[in-house]
Image 1 (cartoon, rainbow, N blue to C red):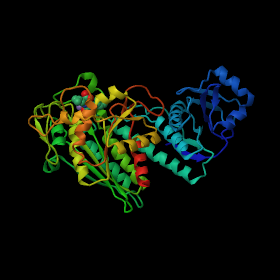
Image 2 (image 1 turned 180 degrees about the vertical axis):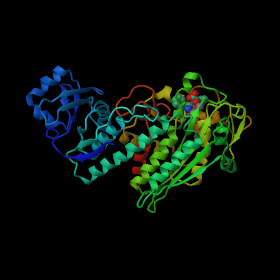
Image 3 (image 1 turned 60 degrees about the vertical axis):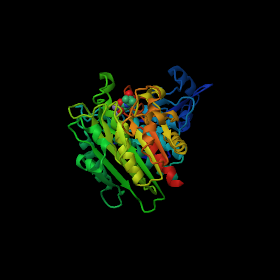
Image 4 (image 1 turned 30 degrees about the vertical axis):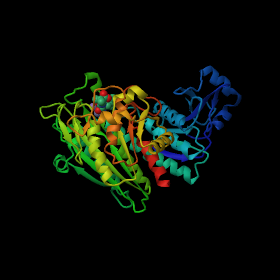
Length: 499
Ligand code: BES
Ligand code: MN
Ligand code: ZN
């Protein structure tokens, strides 16, 4: 276990095995970033030629390790690139890069830009998340982690800084568990197993005096049938692992507003009878990333004791192929009675979300956010590092503002008027699930979800791209599940609590 401490010491005199300093890319060449001033001073005039012969530029992702040979009280200096704009996002990413680069040291000091609570948060979150590994199925438990990480900040003694430092650790832990759940092989994280994991995590969170209060209710397949959750049941019909609906409630006495969170929890998406090509199926264990994110965000909000009520809905199903699977042409009756004609069993997310959204509206929340790995269209439109946000314009704006604070890239997308006709084009049911028109498929999906929101303020976050990193680690984003949206949801809730 690595312990993190916050201190306002001089990085040149700190007794650690390694000290991490940022380098900014400027027109005049590389410059040591804020926080590393004492280190730069310790090298004095020798610094420029040293950076120059090392070939340091300060570009994003750059990392160099330099033996200090007595210039500092720390034997190893680690230089990490911050790019041209050393803002909180750049600092978060650089701390992540540094985290993976220094593993074999007992203690590490981080002397990155950290003269505000936001920057301290970025350094702490970035370092914790960049060092994330998933080794549950390996004999080798991966690289060693330092025993102690010291976050250096000139404002370390301020109350707000200490709070930001503590909160960063809460958020990072929640993101790490989200990653764990996404990375778990789908055969071991079936809907019942996922629901059990959420129950266990809720118990852990709420045990002991003074612990946060979160209530949980799990609906099994029999109870889902009684409720009439035809979407969740229809999607889960082809799997031998039955579906679940998990509902969490955090209702502090001083709650001023009520937020509902809904997350897509498809534990594996084969596409169903409209089966996916082999390549597209590979990473479909990640199709429950939205559910994992809303659950973990709820835990953080409760741990922070924010004065808002949160009702969270995580519909869980496995989209499989069998004799009992839902067919194209079938009509499902959703929770609340709306009927949907199925034409593509691979458009399953909107079906489980439809049931859960209606359940959410029954609680009469002030605002609803749903998070889902919903469409490949969004990945085509925005790439794999940017989430699309659609819905009520004011809510979308607030989500984008929260994402900017959390350091997650999100972008607004429209729900064009023409989508309303397209989702109402079924000849035999209230709604068409899908119409085989490729254009704007991600926006069609959002228009479909909107039908289940009862006109309440709402935003839909399509995280299909950013939820899973198929490539190598970059910044604080490691390979596999990323835990995207947890940070944005928490910052959205923080802002809501202030309003
Ligand atoms: N889970 C997928 C979306 C997805 C794609 C997530 C790529 C992560 C990466 C979703 O259920 C799906 O299959 N969507 C279809 C929608 C289509 C049938 C309207 C898609 O994207 O092709
Ligand atoms: Mn699908
Ligand atoms: Zn899916």
